[in-house]
Image 1: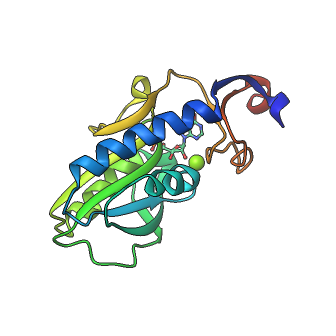
Image 2 (image 1 turned 45 degrees about the vertical axis):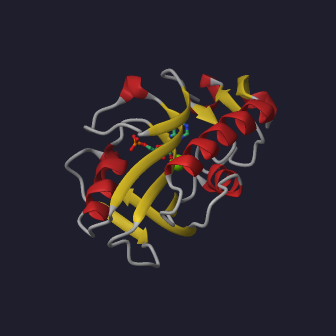
Image 3 (image 1 turned 180 degrees about the vertical axis):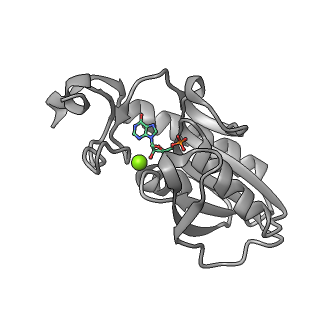
Length: 178
Ligand code: IMP
Ligand code: MG
């Protein structure tokens, strides 16, 4: 499976450093606010579970799964496959995403949750891919910025594979262009 990657972009050690640094910033920012961390399934699963274990204040966790119509264009409909199990009104919500690419799906999810009147809504992402942004959305905080390349591992998939790689690698073009 490792042979399908051109290179390791971020090693396990680099990922841990990046995630711990983000957790430390969030710990300071959300003191006394009992934030609600929301995992966007499935890509964020490892990032989320590592991140929240380094958060050193009381907080709550929830999970959401969404997809959007027509490969996620800005105008397409958002389908909620699994909604949150708690009410976000009046809560300090932190949406935890794996990677922001076009930003289309996240833009729609953000609007959906904003309409439920949270006290605040912040977006944090493991990877930010700003070169490909289409929707008017940006991460409030991130661990790493990547270029226009297709990456897998540490939760990120190609056709549901490679999520379980412990590092983040660049997928060889021949894997998805054959
Ligand atoms: P967006 O709506 O275009 O921002 O797409 C976001 C979703 O596309 C992410 O949550 C990922 O599931 C997927 N995605 C975007 N770029 C990559 C990549 O380089 N590797 C793996 N998944 C990606
Ligand atoms: Mg995905």
